Image (cartoon, rainbow, N blue to C red; front, side, top):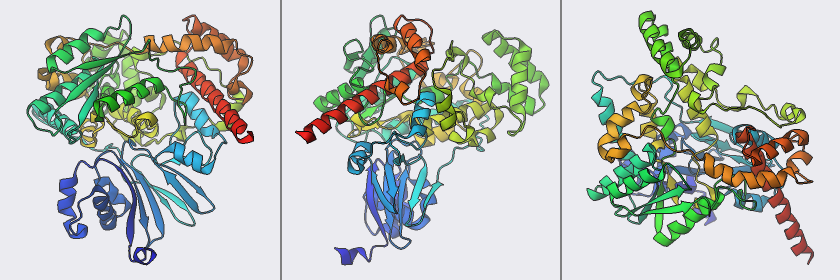
Length: 566
């Protein structure tokens, strides 16, 4: 076995995921494949022909580890959206990696916390390329980590289409292209004959996935033949009637998970290997998938961004200003002014600042929260020392390439950057044995939607403008009339209030003892949260999850020590 290995120049040590453009790559690489047809063989031939930059040709949800014996390199790579996770640790030139974080933590017996991750978690709900464990990193999406005996080099093989522009004379071409790409996004995810589960919230995103998936199944355009809806419901939810409309329209069974019985988080379920919400719900999903023998779960995640669900996209005015079309700019600013109930001069001034060159345009105008979701409070309980120690507000934490996009699209690219670098589309730990996948994150679809004019997707009072025009015929009539959907605030508050009440009276808080949070600040905020009062709940969610996760971690360690002692 060792003798044979010496003659292998390039070896695939790990392939996990789905490859959507197999046929195209098999044709282009036929001379290198020598008859091999597996995804791993295609990935090997891709690297052999084009190097790490060539990994951009692999379209799908995947992670990959390649050993280049000739260059004495090990390459770890992840798809553009980071859907399939991959973690690594290097010590004294020795590389260890795994697609399961828990496996790597157990193998290394790592216990020290990475404070950079904690800072990012409490501020942004995550931290690019880091895990809770010091020295263990995640492979960045759309990138290759090249490890040799002397260095670690990270090279990006996919970049956002910042400079790309697609403009059609006929508006209907945008609709046709969107329909074709979205049908493709679902088709490539339904190539398995096993049962399929689709999350169904009653909103336009998940409903579009369900409606088009069932249409493809009826036409026998995909191998999959059975789809079951799965919905999270709670008392007085505004979404339930629309969930029922869509399920009836598509002729599918829809199973409900009540957030009253299965809350978003509990004291003992806030993530195992890292702090994260929805653990109880995801374990229920895994259980249902097992009973249905389902291998694929479709979601509507990323739909809001991709489909232009913006209440305030008034920076579109910057495009007219940049082209010196002043009359048109004033007309557009007036439309946004009426919708947002802001003076025209404020809309125009923000657009003017956005139209400046990237080095002169202030980042704050792109990082402001969309007007429909503006937080009432930005109160924080993080200690000054901790913020200084971890440089919480360091602008280099995330990539800044979005600044070089056209001014009217910078906000969109910044949101995409955050979503990808925080790996918000990554398969959750309880579901990693399944193909948990997001049609709205289909790379050709993303590249198309991020390259078309902003006003095609959204106009004043018309969020999801293109989506409504392209998908309306797939939807039941009552869904076409829907302008907004319910939010998850009710189940969040139901889960958080009792936990906040218990923590407010706790004598010991790990987040305080570790110097992350001020006791005098967080206690009254927890009390206010338990009573449903304003307290910047979004940050408290992160503090509560981290505190409970640290408690469970300490409890599990004590139990392990007791067992060893016995």
